[in-house]
Picture 1 (cartoon, rainbow, N blue to C red):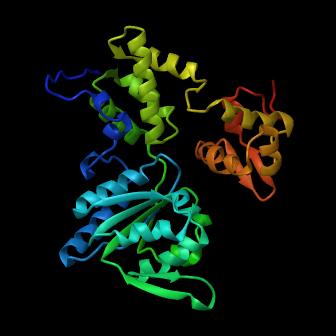
Picture 2: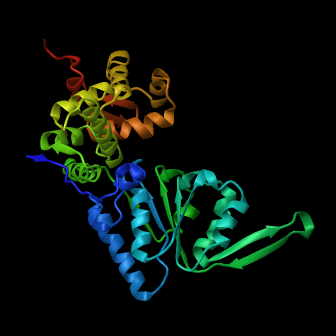
Length: 337
């Protein structure tokens, strides 16, 4: 079965706004996946609205592209609140966070992305703000310095991070609820792709959807990115819809295989197998061999490879599994020819 685009004469062109913004869900019904988290959030929001209070502060963590920012915007919409966005790196000085907090209206939502990159000075100001809605500022220096305390209106901070382990315990403990976003199932990714194709007004075959879903690394952001590139390929080659061959050609152009492994993923596994006899090999040695940062290897490449069962972490280092040998078509040690 083929999904064909609908013709809507008065519908604004997708190019009139950011494509990524257009694809971002704005309501619970449009947000596919993460069902347990959605159920818990709906409960928290409904209880908050019934009590007519500000929502508890919330922390989302998980790999990039899983929908943490989207959840923040949906929560703000459900609360009927204005949302102000910033990020950890943008809050460098005390005056930066003071400017954000001092301009709050009652029940506003502040979304802080990459919250693990907040410096300690900002964290110290946030502690009383999160706990008792007070902001303490030090005016002046030396013996003449004074502390100014400002009462803040009811508000909610929603924070997101890909590295929850880097958050200090005092900051992490001040969030009312903490949620970990997991990789999506292939079925959910297919639903997301079909929804995005409809928004982009592009026709796509079911087999093409399945192929894109498998190559998306279980991540909505990557799924939408691949869909946009397949749309580009179909358009340039005068194709009326995206079929399986279109997807195959698109993936080949970007050196992505059928399971979503990119060139660096495959090289990582090949180094473990060919250079270190399958492992174990320490992450520092592996990062040096790849010419990548250690954090990039452990936080970007390894989680996906582990989810596929291609990589195993042990106390001695990283080990390539039999599935990795098979995927790369490499004969495993001890295997008969």
